[in-house]
Amino acid sequence: MKNFNIPNYYKSSFISTIKELRKVTDPRKKDFSPTLLDFGSVQFLIARHFGFCYGVENAIEIAYKAVEENPGKNIYLLSQMIHNPIVNADLKEKGIRFIMDTEGNQFVKWEELTNDDVIIVPAFGTTLEIEEKIKSIGLTTEKYNTTCPFVEKVWKVSNKLGQNDYTIVIHGKHNHEETRATFSHSDSSGPSLIIKDINEANFLEDVILGKKSAEEFYKVFEGRYSKGVDIINRLDKIGVVNQTTMLATETQEIADFLKATMIKKYGVDQSKNHFADTRDTLCYATNDNQQATIGLLKENADLAIVVGGYNSSNTSHIVELCEEKLPTYFINFAEEIENNNTINHFDFHNKKRNKINNYLPNNKEVTKIILTSGASCPDTIVDAVLDKLLSYFNSPISKEDIINNLKKNEASTIRQA
Image 1 (cartoon, rainbow, N blue to C red):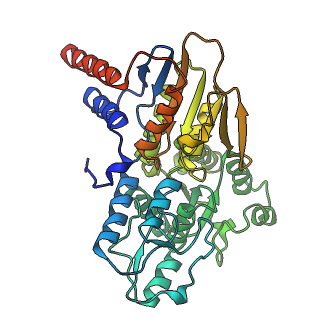
Image 2 (image 1 turned 90 degrees about the vertical axis):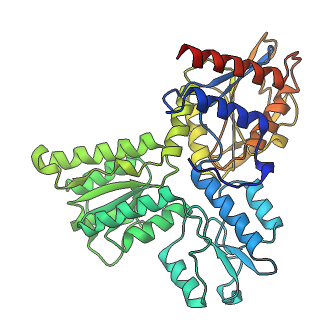
């Protein structure tokens, strides 16, 4: 896989070394079990996969290249580069201005832009409408387009579905930048519809089977379906694609369910003409991170710390998975840990930050902490969180000791293989 040129201050010699050691012992990514960091009185379970993915590193490299190559010019990002406050703040410090927020509300009016300015498209991509607006100003998006290749893959599949007269069902959050971009691209190819979960898939089944009326459909899916087309009568052929940061298992559950719906209506033999197999639109990085989280949760632990941006979809899904098993705290950097008694946890379900006391267990001989992060979180932040937590325990074992022990284990594993 390509090595990207990203700033060194996003990298951590400790965390990065752990990742590299796992790559050596598990080059084909078959082992999703965590790495155990045993400091004696505290043990950390580190996910097999976490942190910057291919698409994020690609986006960061292109954004910093845009700054380097255009001194003195006005450089604009359409919206947040990725959903991480540290990275976005750093880009602003470099002089990049954000045109919109994540909801599409504008900070910079289009009239302020000139054809001598520089535009960066974020990793989530953008809509065809915004692309046309940019072109009308005399600007181009090609040079500094950081759209994730896996997002573009979803667009290509959507286009193929539309060309073959399928209605495109998008599993995603309708107000997320990526979903807005995907809907815009798929809508240009064929009728499109956004659903958020399996409950809405159940509702859609009732519409397909004639148990719910068109009026009920339009009310539930207001603002989430193609206009200017009789979409109710275009639900005889469907294919499911996804917002790449959603839970892969949920997308697959929705796809399997709607495939079963078509079998109910048309029978097994004919269903293949009414439902398209699109499972290859799942992002490998999102899936790896989620599988690594599931691997983490097979181990016993006292609590989980998940690090990432509060508006990061893929991070919130990791939090969801952890919450099912043990106390989980969602933070975006080490400063949210006030001391060994108090942590500021973000409740993404209710969109609020809560101060939690007694988050660390008392009077335990060994405390076990799960530690992972979202795909847009730099390793340095995870390392800082680990250091902060480690400072609350008396440990004679250093991080250097940990690395040396892991290297010995790696050498042993290679010899056994």
